[in-house]
Length: 189
Ligand code: SF4
Image (cartoon, rainbow, N blue to C red; front, top):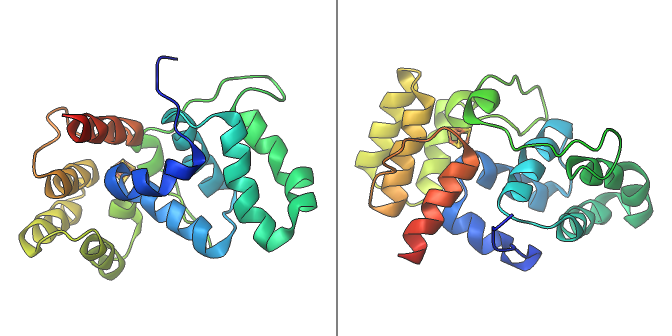
């Protein structure tokens, strides 16, 4: 891969600047709860891999959080395998790819799950509060909420991108890693 490596220490700053809402939400939850259920670990973990987090840093990231709740031993016994597996280092050695928006939007998060697409799966109140925390103005929030009402979740995400960056994402939003890449291009220019 030609992608510049992302270090674990950079994750929070990159999240604030360039993660789509689905990934900001998962990161916020794992920082708060020191745990994520399987669906959330997969959605966030593969995204982090996609932005260039190395396996070693991914293990540090998940271990740092989960050890606070379960201890290091339990992490190493029960969760580390899955992290290595996602990087193709265990089992069938498939190099798993990060989930697309369609896959995330059509997932069905249950009670206690935090994966999924906030535009599709959050209540109206929770979504509008989350958008407020992103410091979007009222006009943008209204625009996003209208798109959500019309079931145009990816257009709602694109409107959020435009509100955050002050410029549209010309290619639309079809993948969380594409949202991230487009955002980094803007930060670099
Ligand atoms: Fe994430 Fe895609 Fe939903 Fe945006 S539209 S929040 S990138 S799943």
